[in-house]
Length: 370
Ligand code: DCP
Ligand code: CA
Ligand code: CA
Image (cartoon, rainbow, N blue to C red; front, top):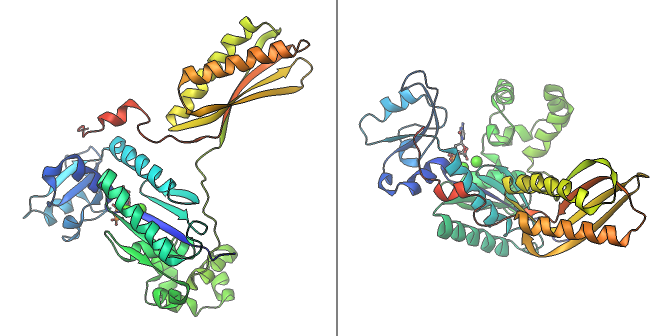
């Protein structure tokens, strides 16, 4: 088996970069995206800031009042969060990323892992080209820069994408793992928050190198079996977690019970259409489309029968899917003279993220003050 090759992509100063693109006149100025608590015009915290603002130590979590003081001598722009804007940019970029990996896993609004082991044939040079291509495509299509890490597993890929920012591309090959990890602080390890960090600092463990000197038993005594083992492996750059799309379902269905058992097409059809309408609403909300449609017939003797059809191309519009479901129902009733239905259902399979606009709002996602 070829060695594993994982890419981690993290978009740079994401909310602030979206704001810069939505309003080019703020380019070059410190930009601060704020979560206003609403009590006073200055209460709340910074959600993120661009790199100009970070030069003044203004970053995520800084109080807005503090940020205003730190940036008093500048032409800083303070903006409220515009989540619909960031969601639509993120959705389009995730679709780009999904196309570049054998496996894809989104882990936040602005980050994802790609498994490229197969498509790169385990070659770092090929993976690097895939990484550069991702950067170019996102920049060209969305005017967003990102930082990329390429490594033999998710843990190292994430640390690598964080290593050079913004607009970085860091590769960690197997023989570089130890030198890459050694000097880094323990809080760089994903999952190491304040509590774990404090406990490690109390034992004089500051860097990953220090951490790698602790025995698995010592670590398990300090943090329990699960976390202790994780830290022991992480200090060595080991991690076997697969890249898997957790969010994306592959199928969805709706089933309803008929008022009475029947095989009358005209009675069943409106029930099926209503179920289809509700299902399509759901897949459109999730930005998905489907490749095949099935109907499910649960008969009066409780046996279950299904009929399926593959669509000519992926679809998410009610008309196509409703027509297909109705036709399947008609064919099922005609071909099963004994069948009396108790319940009926519709199922869509082969779900994938629809590229392009998923709803009308994303066309209008310019800034609206809130
Ligand atoms: N975010 C937030 N509050 C935080 C951290 C992040 O609201 N405490 C939001 C705003 C960020 C986005 O999530 O733009 C992504 O978070 P990152 O930690 O990846 O930070 P950025 O993308 O802003 O900056 P960087 O360039 O360091 O990745
Ligand atoms: Ca980011
Ligand atoms: Ca992130």
